[in-house]
Structure formats: C-alpha cells, structure tokens
Length: 313
Image (cartoon, rainbow, N blue to C red; front, side, top):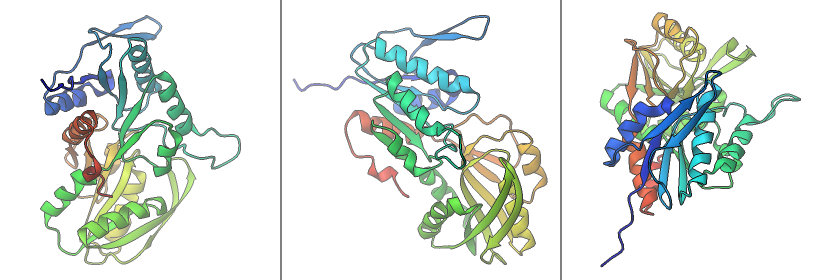
C-alpha cells in the first residue's frame, strides 16, 4: 500500500484569524485550535490544543503593528518547536518592520534583518510571504523563503476593468521595478513619481516623470500606510490631465487619517488584499482576498511540487 503523506495542520495568530479561516477553508482543512492565556499586565501565552508531534504545521500571522503581533508569531513558533513539530512554516502575508531594511543614516537598526533572525531562532523552518517591501530581505534568512506576488490577484482584476489608454505608475523611484513589471504584463505605458520626504510619512515635494494626459492611470505599490503618497500622486496626475487614477497596493495598513485622505482625494478606488485586516469599510476601498493564493502555495509546499507559476513578477 503506497505511503500517504499526512495532511498538515494549520493554525492562525489572533490578528490573522479571519484570513486563517479563509485559507484553511480553501485548503480543505479545519483551522487548528490554539488557546491564549492572558495575564493582567498584558503578557500572553499560546497553547496548541492538539498534538503536533512529527507534523508539518503552518502558522498564519501577519506582523503588522503593534509589536504584539510579531511577538505572538514568535511565541507560537517556539511552542511548536518545543512540541516536536517536524516542519514549521511561518505564513506571513505581510512581513512587518520591512521598511527598516538598511541603514539609511547613522546609529539606526536594520529591523528586517533582526526580525528574520528572531523568526528562525524561534523555530521557523520556512517562510511564506507576499510582496516584501524590499526583495533583498529574502537574503536575511538562512531558511527557504517563498516570496509570492500579489500581481497574481491584481492583474486579472485590472484586465477585467478594460481600461482604455492604460498607464501604470509608481508613486516613488523605489517602486519603478514593480511598475515596469506590471506595464510589461499589461502592455501599457509607465510613469514614475519622484518624491522628497521631510521626515517619515511626510512628503515635502513631488514631481511626475512622464505624460499622463488622457490616460487611465493605475498606481502600484507594496503598501499604503497614511495614504499621503498615493493621494498626492493621484491629485497631481489628475491636474496633469489624467482621465482617472486608481491604486493597487498589496498591504493596506491605512493608519492615522488615511481613510479621510482617500475619501477627499481624486483616487477613483484603492484596491488592497486582506493580508492585513482592513479596519473599516469605505466606498473607495476594495479588498481582494489572498486566501486562495496562500492555500495553493501551502498545498504545493506540503506535496513538494513547483510553485514557480505563482511568481509572475
């Protein structure tokens, strides 16, 4: 009788429970039970409520702020390691702290590198994530990293819009590679925004490189935080003669007054994934689920089959 590969067990951190349930349902499995004991001072302790000895397990949890989300993932990894799980995969749709991927001034940390080392020390034997802020973060790990692209979700959506005179735009120089990849896939023009920051989350100046007159523009970025860059870029492009401006961003942090900025801007819509729970509903914000993408990749990883078809960029 041929050997049957045991099915993996799927668990979720509390911040990603909803997404974890969707992923487990798409995979065709039940989400595993984890109990969290909490102390009055805020300390917490996760406990797997079923045996995971010798099993392959997937732990789903984005590490967006606050810091307890990352700590929760670390504690669950450590608990799984000490419970003798065979393979422990950290499924992190959003890899937080990634904007600190280098020293851009003296006496600052490289937080992305630190987080990578903590995840491995805690027990992760593999990482699955999506649209890292910087590609080189993969090199911070000594364990395998499957870096997925949300373009597998966004490209079909954009094609379905059937926009005439489509133009892809990057809101900054750092995203130009991503913008060119989208423009190549969609056979469209591309423009770039050049911005200068006074400090974090504050733009002092922005210029447009390229022509958007008469174009339906789609801004592409990996994340949207305060929405200052996207809304300023959208308003600038409409002033330069664009017919419409919409934005696709993988990770919708949407902090501070982001929703107010989006509502008062000339953005037609903002499309994000559910890698991070969207805090509130908004007429201009559309959410595409990444659950099927992750469940498919998890299935391929478990059965040792290729996932190269998920790397469209």
